[in-house]
Length: 175
Image (cartoon, rainbow, N blue to C red; front, side):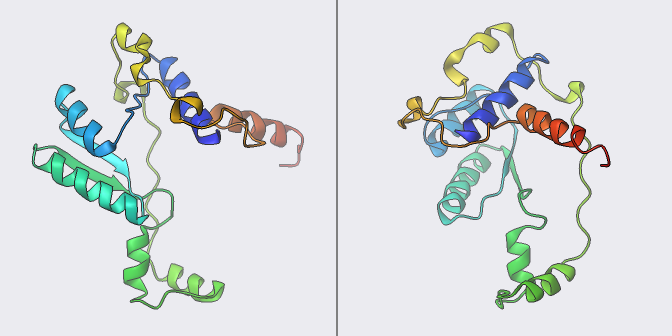
């Protein structure tokens, strides 16, 4: 539920500035090629995933889209460095202690700089009909075949996180 709430919050925030989140439903290997063609996409980016299933899926999608002359680029942003960079740097000697991990981490080089937040000019606007087309809405747990039940004590989304942070900071004036 937390991740779906986070996606819904992102969609709500995008809609507030005249855009939206498009959620494709189905197997990515089938859906992405269809919509890349329909929407005339020439450049696709995605979050790199290290899980074996995701690597196979992403390799397949890259192959399909590259054959259609779509530039595909992945980025690793859920860790400070790409996991492949860690494993190549340690030459197969995976750290088994915190101190050995710190030694490896300190040898990785400088962290990449953070990107500036997007501006309104960089966020594509959508046609009014697209804003009300429920085809691409964030699905509910029920629509995904799960029981609609609150499974997390914390509500997902940036708006909720900022609200909670503000409450915590306000209650700690010394911060």
